[in-house]
Length: 245
Picture 1 (cartoon, rainbow, N blue to C red):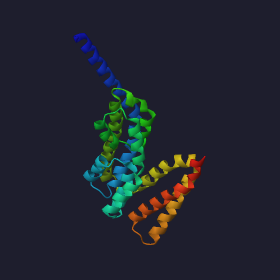
Picture 2: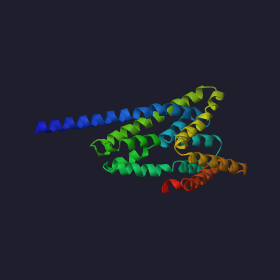
Picture 3: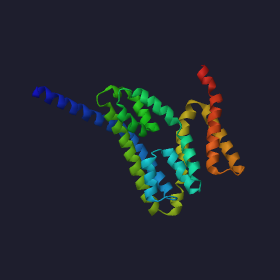
């Protein structure tokens, strides 16, 4: 009995170690990609937020594009409601991502699903989807947790370092980091446009709507919200043909 117990303990320990190592290996590329973007966010956010505030936003929000947008909107003096609604609209896709992840992670206990769902980003979702079979393993939940914690740590740590740099580097250089916001959104858009040109058309129409609304003296935050909703709604019709094929 004692021998069997020792073997089981050794086997469990080996499986747990393998899950952690696999999570670290699969999450390392995400970690490398997050750090420079998080530093850029920290430098940009330092223009309008304190080091504590910008780091707390990374700890509580953990949503790169939304944080860039939020920092920009805070700097522009937009209200809290506008920032919250704009963030909600921009992250609406996470409902779909979370449902898809929960479907793949059915064998994972519910007590693990709740915290794991908070760690979903575009990148961790993509890697989790590619390794959906991990959910059926005894320590699959540990694999997902390791993957997401590594990405989370890289983002929060990079934000803190960026915030420190933002307080040290010259203001003109810091302001030049505004380009990071546009570069990030273009980087998110290009892969989709390469697959479907109509996605690019939707983005251009949304930009025109946003410009028109701002020209009509609408607040910048609400203009972003409305142009995003209107552009997204237009996509239902422009991309409808793909469903009929």
